[in-house]
Image (cartoon, rainbow, N blue to C red; front, side):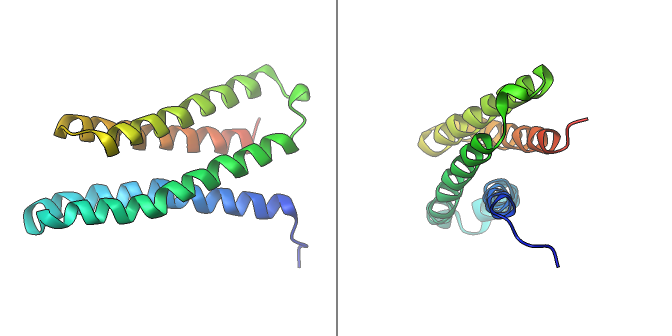
Length: 136
């Protein structure tokens, strides 16, 4: 059996956070339209329940991301790696800001644009994370 390492633990925790953050948004994208027609009063409670799970997972993503960055030897990385990492960090910031716009927005447009921008930027950050883990 392969011996577990702290790097493996960090990666597993990072993936757990990403799974809940992105997966939850995808699930809600399917559930919210149904709730709007069948149980509109439940929308707020569902959103608050998701936020109680999602934001701690976002914090986990950030903390394990910092841990991972500290563990790499950044000065030895290629310029392509560094640029990819920078774009990923930009997308992480966009997903956080867009999520806040979605959560705090009072108009349907703010909620829709914030939610869509959060999901798209999170998916982009996840893709860049895969590229960083498997550079060619």
